[in-house]
Image (cartoon, rainbow, N blue to C red; front, side, top):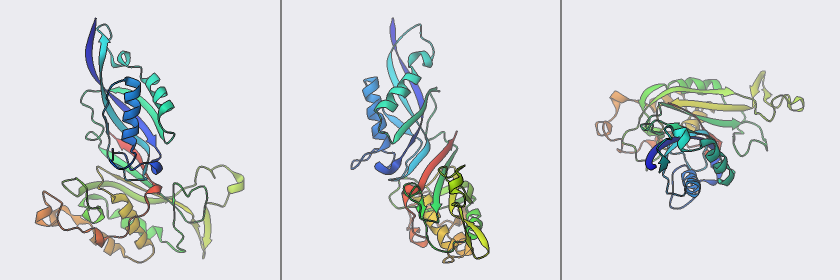
Length: 298
C-alpha cells in the first residue's frame, strides 16, 4: 500500500560563481538555483523548488552553501524514516554527474519539517582574497592589489569598528528588498595566508612575502567577516572602503563615521531603510570574483 509523504531535505554544496548571475533565479542569465532545480526535476521526475540560505552577487562563489527542498512521493507504508524514503547518497552521486562542473554537492541529508535554509541561519561568513604580487594562479579567485604600500594594521583597527549592531546602509547597494539596513557583525579582520598551491612546495618558498623597507610584508591576504545577515553588495563595499584606509585616503575616524548606531538613524529609517541613499559616502566596491561565502551556522 502506498501513501504520499512530504519530506524536507538539506543540501550542502559549493559553487564557482564565475559563470552565474548569483544564486537566485534570474530572467536574464544562468543561476545556481536554476541549475540545481533543473537537475533535481530531471532525477526526481517532478517539479522541485529549492530554497537557499541567501543571495550571492554575480560572480561571487561559495565554498559552503546550504539549501533545502521538499519532495512529495508515493511511499510504501512500512517505510518510516526519511532515509528509507529517498536514497540521499545515490541522489548526491547523480546530481554531481549532471550538474555543471562549477557546482558540487557536498551532502544531502533528511531535515526536520521546520528547517529553513535561510531563516534558520544564525551566522554567515564571507572571505575576500587579495594578493599583492602578480600571480597567474590567483587571478581567478583573488584581487590583485598592486599599490606599493598598504597599511593592513590600520585596516584591522578600522575593521574592529564594524563589530556590533549598527545601520550599514552606507555599504548597501540600491535595489535590495530588505526592510532594514541593521546588521550585527561578530567578526571582521585581515590576516595573511599562504595559498594552497604554494604550501609545502620548497620551490615556492619566499613567494608569500616581500621586504618593504625594513619590514617583511606578506603578499597574500584574506578578509573574514561574520554577521547575522548581509546587505546587497555589503562585503565588497566594506573591503573597498577599508582599502582606502590602508592607502591613507581615509582615516579610521572617517571610516567609523560611516556606521550609524541604531539609535542615531534618521526617523524615516527606523522601520524602513529605504530613505536617501548613503552609499556614495563609502568607497568603491571591489571585484566580486575574489569573494566567497565560506560558512553558515545554524
